[in-house]
Amino acid sequence: MAVYTKVSAEEIDAFLTRFDVGTLVSAKGIAEGVENSNYLIETTEDRFILTLYEKRVDPNDLPFFIAMLDHLAAKKCPIPPMIADRNGVKIQELCGRSACLIKFLPGISVTVPTAAQAQATGRALGNMHDALRDFTGTRPNSMNHDTWRQLAKDCGPDNLDAIASGLHDLVEAELDHLDAHWPDDLPQSVIHADLFPDNVLMLDDQVTGLIDFYFSCTDIRAYDFAITHTAWCFSEDGAHFDAAVSSALLEGYRETFDLGRNERLALPILARGAALRFMLTRAYDWINTPADALVTRKDPTAFLNRLKFYQDNPDIFKA
Image (tube, rainbow, N blue to C red; front, side, top):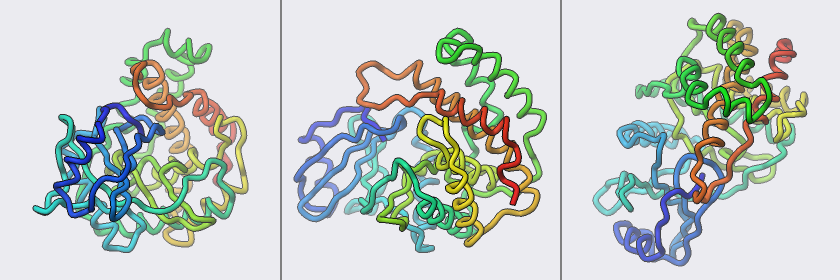
């Protein structure tokens, strides 16, 4: 979450008159994340998240996201529903941006996950994949592995090497390796594709919400687990791997869905791809984030460290 588009209290107050949600009490911009503009809204009746969709979110994709979230909510997954206005419309416009009002869910995002929290998250991810098996919507992955080479070019060799010495050559070598080994015969489904700890709400060791589905797309299902693994099983800087959290995440997933043999065998390469993908998008944002944006830039070397770990430890997913 982040704030790129500034919205005044008066504009938010007027926006809320479209809904049966009470009147505005307070509004606060949320600085975490890098994708959309988000505000925590409190009204006389409840709390909500106001999201204005920026840069990577195509307004034409919003009906897909809404259909997917409605489907998951109907399957009793802990998903925050989008609120319809008095005319039944969920996709709004505010300050020249597509916007949605979203139900606020209780819980906090953990920064240093425990094994118990990772196991609960694995169960929630498995339940989500199970619930999506009969979802018929599709959306291409705009950040799939075929896009990573262009993303590296957009960052530029000098900019990559300014982030870490020799990074450009490392990225080129890894891209060649992934192109040669990326699997094309694994089960696909709609996936979250961004299930970091800050996109999971928890109370104690229980998952109360899965949020921020705006990278959701159709891709290799096991890749979703690999992304979650890269996000949950390391220290924030990527320098330390937590084997207990890794085992618990896998165990939780196996309790509710599990992986096939070929999916399990592919996890090392999928995890390398996940680490490279987030390193490159963080690098691009690091280079291009506007100086006046209320947003927290994220260090790309945290995922460089993860990538190097996966390169050196291909056996960590073996039972």
